[in-house]
Image: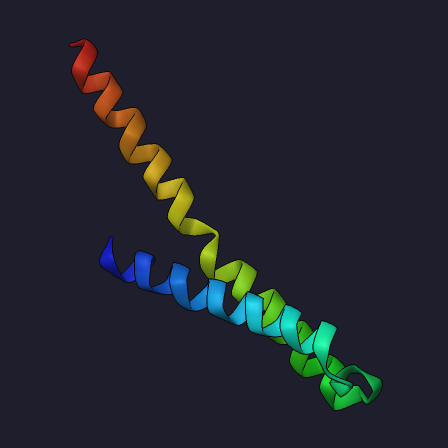
Length: 68
């Protein structure tokens, strides 16, 4: 769980830095900049996505145990 939480925060940081590079720099005018920014945004989104799902599954299991 701690590893997923760490990956979530690293992914969020990558996503925000990719968006910031896209909005506030001229990196995307060259192909290498486009690849870097799109990789940061894409990998950041993929890295942060499993954590909320795991939290939901844990919550659902706790609700199920509460009812029994």
